[in-house]
Image (cartoon, rainbow, N blue to C red; front, side):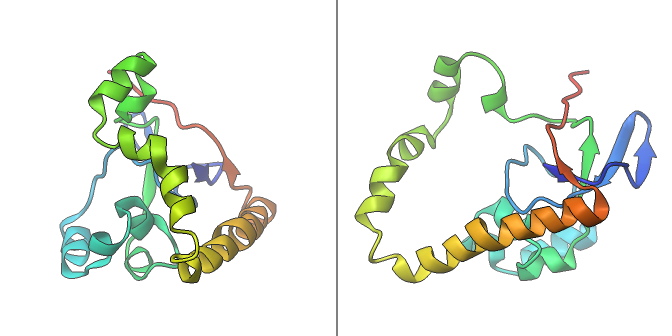
Length: 149
């Protein structure tokens, strides 16, 4: 997660940080009624990964939402816990994850109209944006601790 060095506010032992990451990996969401209405009114989460639709600052839905990260995180993804064998058995997506490279290679030319803009966005523009955020705001990529209790 790419976060500002200091939180905007504190709620008990949790600090609320402005989230500056564009990717996913959210383990859970806390969403206001107004935010939920906006998400349900649009179709972005139907056509894109939920995290990408919600957190990509260039996506229409993300421009309408105020996104914050609690530190420490109140929830954690299951793949961050336990043994590797346990995680594979519990994930419905593991088969797709294992074979994603093969699937992507087989569809490369058919997906070229998507792959090229995706390459520009993720491999050129995103690193430039991250450098700018670090230089101007001190936003750094870091692991967010998990609060178990």
